[in-house]
Image 1: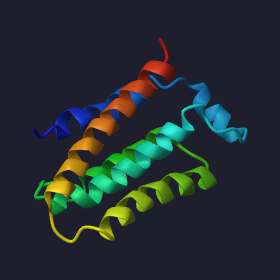
Image 2 (image 1 turned 90 degrees about the vertical axis):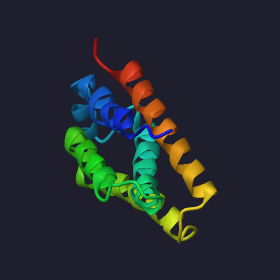
Image 3 (image 1 turned 60 degrees about the vertical axis):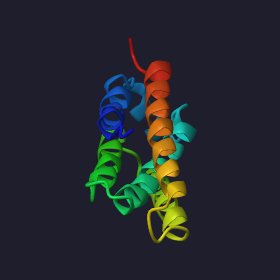
Image 4 (image 1 turned 60 degrees about the horizontal axis):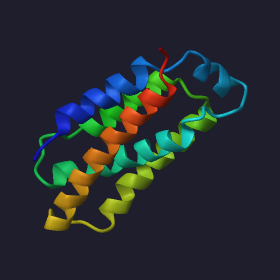
Length: 132
């Protein structure tokens, strides 16, 4: 089952539509937002999807990198925080680039699980930290 459209909507919509304004203030004060660990994980997942989805035939050459760009734009992180988010994305990408050279059943399964996990993280972040 292919579920990229719902994940994209969640990534670009649910996470950032409800983000409270204080998140940017916290970042400038040096304290990461309370959802930082989840956002790092989401960045890693986007990196993995950027590698594995096209490998398995999805017509998504830049989709997941574009999603990461939207995340960075929405968060407006400091340079240091931006570097950590980008490093997480690259770690996700590289972890699969080192293992998979062709699409296998294992790669397909990983892709599906990352789509599901990314959607869940997005929903959870929006529900827990979004404004009312």
